Each structure stands twice: as C-alpha cells, then as structure tokens.
Length: 323
Image 1: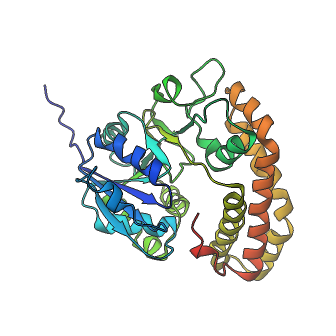
Image 2: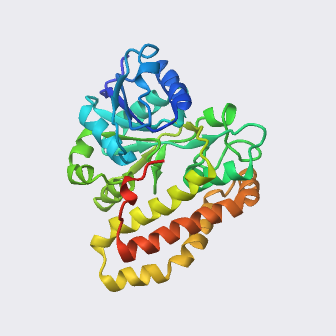
C-alpha cells in the first residue's frame, strides 16, 4: 500500500566560504541522496565552480565577488530555489547518509512544523586538540549528536557508527542554522527577516512566539569538518557577538542596552552552564569539554566583548565580516 502523505520536494542551499575541500565532500554526499535541487552560494576569495561544476553538473553555483554574510547567502539561495522544503547547510558540514530523506519524512509527517533540523557530529581524528574541541563546543556543542543524549557508552557522538545512529524525532527548544530545513510557505511569511539578512535564530524565535514547534529529525545528522585558524576564531567570535547585540538594539531602550552591556561579563559563565547541562548523559563529551574549557571560555568572552560594544555603539562593519 502506497504512503498517502505528500512527499515534499527538497532544495538544498549550501552557504560556502573558503572551504573548497569540505565543500567537495559535502556535495559528494548530497550527490548520493535524493534532493531535487542543490545550490551553492559562495563568496570565497576564489570561485569554486570551475573546479567543481564538472564533477557535480547538477549543482547550480552562484558566486559573489564580495563579502556576503552567511544568512544573506542562505536567503539568496532560497530566492533561487524551487523546492517545497529548503534545507540549509554550510560548506564545512557533510550530511550523513539519508539526511535528505530524514528531513523529507519529518516535514511530511509534521505538517504544522515550519522548521526541521538535526544534530551535529564531530570526529577530528587522533582525539583532536583542545582548540579543535573548543571550536566545536562553542559553535555546535548544544546540538551535539546524538541529540537526545543517548547512544555510545562514552556519550561522544562522532563520525561513523555514533553519528549515523538513529535517535527519536521530536520537538526541541532550539536548532542550529547549520543543519536546518524550512517549509517554503514558512520562509515566505518571514520575508521581512530574510530581506534584513537575519540569522536563523530570529526566524525560530518568531515561529515559537506564534506557537508553532521547532522539530528535530533524529536521523538528520551532519558532521562538522571545519578547520579554522585561531585568528579566524578570535575575529569571528567578537564580530558575531557585536552583530547579535546590534540586531537586538531596535527592541531595547537605551537604559536596557546599558544594563546588558554592564552585565556582559556574566555571559560566558551563563553560556558555559547551558553547554554543560546540554551534555547531560554524555560523559565522554564532558571530558572533552573539560579539556578544552579554556578555549570555550575564551570564545565566550570574545563574544561578550563584542556584545557589549554592539549594545553601546551598534554593529558597525561587523555584519559584513565573513569567516
């Protein structure tokens, strides 16, 4: 008996910046999956299309010879896409087997869910350095696979068996924009945010205020393969923190902005506590966090400094910084 539920078509938008090797890995994984459309939106120093278009002839490449923020790359891709569902990836993320079908299945089952996302795995090889783990925990630790805290004996979700293990689908409080998919109609209703170049978190906040759920597809895992330099990490944390604060300024009075600026030294400790709690049931992950906590706190501190500056002086050029 055939499944009566509609099967939505899926467009995958890959935001790309200066990571040609991992972009190739990402596209190779997508080539073996069932997306109806794959688009790469790139603002690298060099256009990757001449190297990759022959290897991936079905992929559409869009190159921008100037800095374009990750959110604006995503939403430009949405404008060019045709799928009923638009899935977002970053060029340093490699989707696991069945990623597209896992998203398709949950979107089909959960008609009221505007957004469906998944977890992020990490396998740096040879145990990884404290810096590598600190970079991962800062960016994706709260979304670490397996997303429900179950799984391997040591609790660490990495590439291979642990990252491919299926976990339960379900509603969640937050999702990472690096592994996220949206119903087209939901994005069209957020056109003002897309035009503004807002981060995914702003869309998710709006959906939650409207009473619509964020949903996790337990099998839709991607693996983080980024390898930033310490300089990139330092600049990114500060500028993204400043941009975040500048985005909030329109909703705050001057007095509220001053209070947030003065309390910004508390932010690293609050974020560390949330991260630690999110790793409940993953003792192996907590061991890695303890080993890399200096880098994590350094990153949180840079973010809070950027936030403080953003609340007082606005975003400046931080919106246009790409890493």
